[in-house]
Length: 147
Image (cartoon, rainbow, N blue to C red; front, side, top):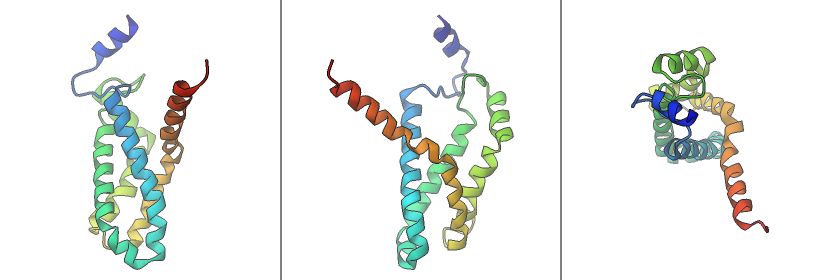
């Protein structure tokens, strides 16, 4: 009964983070962060590699712009209205950090490698990046464990 009431409180435009779609979106962003964490240091070593990866960074930053927008409409246990979600996101400082690691390279059109140092701020989400492995291991051990 409590879950039904909880779902009824959400407006149509508020995302429930417990849905499969929202979790898939989080996993896609975890993969994006892993790719950035691996590729970004290589760009500082090899200039040609940086030039080759420009399209990747445009796509990656596009995902982050969408992620920033989605954080304004993704509920949690305490914040279930647009106003409360927005206040939480802005007050936590995450919005500023997310903008700092996404917008500078977009502003310079992905051409200035110095602006790419701000992308290292994405490592702030490093602890979340392991959730995909945790889910895989839980699935694996629940499927193939001996009973």
